Length: 519
Image 1 (cartoon, rainbow, N blue to C red):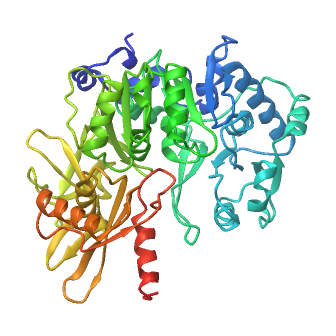
Image 2 (cartoon, rainbow, N blue to C red; image 1 turned 180 degrees about the horizontal axis):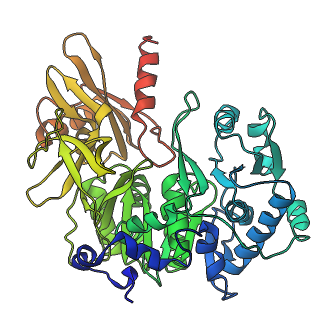
Image 3 (cartoon, rainbow, N blue to C red; image 1 turned 135 degrees about the horizontal axis):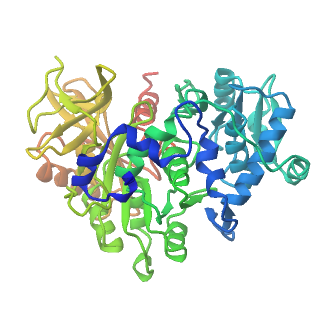
């Protein structure tokens, strides 16, 4: 039997992929499957097999083996059972990647509970909303985060410190899971503000199987890869694509604890000889401004990115530095990855600026307001066919004559000025071509004559003079069109972003309404 991991070409992906073959990559079966067993226990036979390299700025790297995580998570599972946890109970985990995080995550899943990762930068309001929604029996955190959980009611707070691990030593280091593939395993909250509760996406144990489609063709994971993902495992990209998928294949993964630092990431890539990385487009842009990145020797063979589209100057930096292109991986937390650029496939032409093509077996279209399929180069909404219906992604895009998909912004990020429909992403990409611009965001703001005009927010080390503003406006006029230039330009120290690394234009729009006393 030839496994799907044995194929690397685009042609083979289209010729040999079937959903049924995904099950061949796992030890479990349809009526008995557990994510923790698939990601940890079955790879713990080799006591020295490294599972996770944890990078923290200003601290030595920490390496955890599969055997260590299997032991700790089994003890935690036995502890949970002793506390009365039953199948389906929720266990919230508010920790940076460390020994306790992996013990709690996989231990809860082993025990048949539902693991609920929470972003460590949430304040009391953000925690209270999510805890009130999922109603966990426990919150596992550390003493530094106690202020964030102070208002939580009817939930036991577990401080994962040395004393707690000493207590776990009293429990067995083996545990046999007993879960069905249809049992709930993880609740994943999408990114959002603390003033509104984002939806919890509920994943069963079976999700680890369907996840492998994006792992194989979106991040190009194959046996033998050393894989780094700097995104927080509290969010979809960092948890599913950065942690669970590669660990299900028994790979060594790298992750960040604490604040992201681009120079520390580049150092870790070179020091540990990582061969594959998936990151947000923002991470690549931040790496681009590190001054000595070319002095390092990298072993990178495959790269992928998600979040916002990548601008041309960052694409050029990636190819020059790592000698391979960054491949787009597009999807949403709710529907998963649907468009990829097949990293590692020598017969797939990675088109600059493109989202790639559909994953094997998927049907994706660009449709107009009447749900009619758009011809090439006509902008419409991206939709995917699932379970007998077309599901909206709420993103705009178009295809080219070769069937490649291109992103044209969120449906709610369209700017309409004097009857012209403009894409915030296109305007931002045009601004980013200026050599002194580090980051840019564009929104539409009210205007009495035109309905809306473009207001650009720019991050730069250069002072925001009138001359600089004129240069930016002229660059957009000449590079994009005469009517799409930003009539207002504001210089800021940083742009608000979602935890997944995307520019949070919603926050910019809210801030602008406050600035103009409209709310």
